[in-house]
Length: 184
Image 1: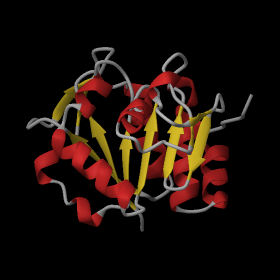
Image 2: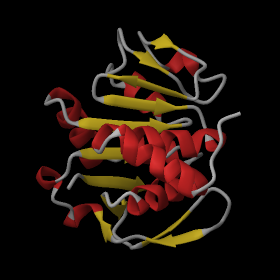
Image 3: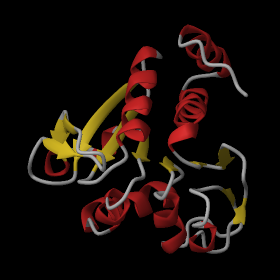
Image 4: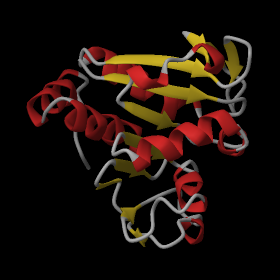
C-alpha cells in the first residue's frame, strides 16, 4: 500500500489539505498528516485548527512514497521556510519519488528548479514563479513524478490524480463516483 505524507503549516488552505486526506483514506491509501512545527495542532488560513497525526521531527521519510504540499497563505511560505521539509522535497524529486502541490504550493517547486521543462499549474497569477515550467491552466498537471493543481476549486481532481498515480484509474473513478463528483 502506498504511503503519503501531507504537510500542514500555519496558514494552510484547509480544503486543499483535508480534501486530499479524506479522499485518499477513502481509497485505502495510507496518508499521514504532519505538522511542520513541534505541535500537533495547526491553524489554517481561515482560522480552522486541525490536529495532525504527527510532527515533522517524528516522520520516517524513507518509508513514504509521496509528499503532498497544500497551498494557502501564509502556509505556502511557511512550508518553504522549513529546511527539513525542503531537503526532503529535493531528495524525493531527485530519486523519482512523487511530490504533489496545489494552489500557491507549486511555486515552492518552481523556486527550487524542479519544474524546469515540465508541465505545471498553480493558483492564477503565480505562474511567473513556476520557473522554467510549461504552465497550464488545466485543473491538474501531471509531469513525471510531480502533480500540481490550481486551487481550492480543484482539490477533488487533485486528490483523484494522486489516487490514480498511487493506485489506478479504476480506484480514482470509484472514489469520484462515491463522492458524487462530476466534472464541469
